[in-house]
Image (cartoon, rainbow, N blue to C red; front, side, top):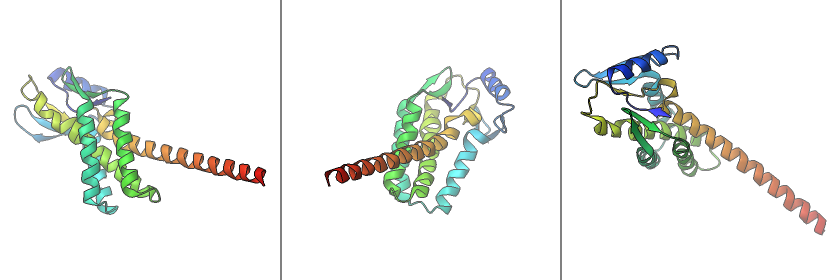
Length: 198
């Protein structure tokens, strides 16, 4: 799964052409106008970051919880990333592991009774953690390697920064639903067994 920067004029043009029909995936906002210039893709990074900030504010997520969960996600996403042909890449199953760990952290911090808060924490954790670990911390690795342009979230709507939060919520709800079903099955079996003994 792609993420991070595209290096070189040809790859930048190719990325914009391939993503031109995917909503605003081809729009990059320039952050630093120098050499190399640094930009941020609207859907690939800016949108999930803004959503994360709104979630943190309106869901009143505790800063301590956020720091703990985001730090873990940063470490994992940075450790699992690889740079190939000037692009930051994270392969399967590592991108799933990152989102799953973000979901697990959120579940532990929010508690099993507040699934909505856990979902909010998991989205913000996954999005912020992967943005920093996958994009920002990799900037130093790519700096000076004949780079023509740095693009945060260059993959648009298929960028991992965009998808990480969505995957984390999906993992959280799938896991909790499965656990709830298994719990009900176990209770039913125990009840049936106790009735037989009587």
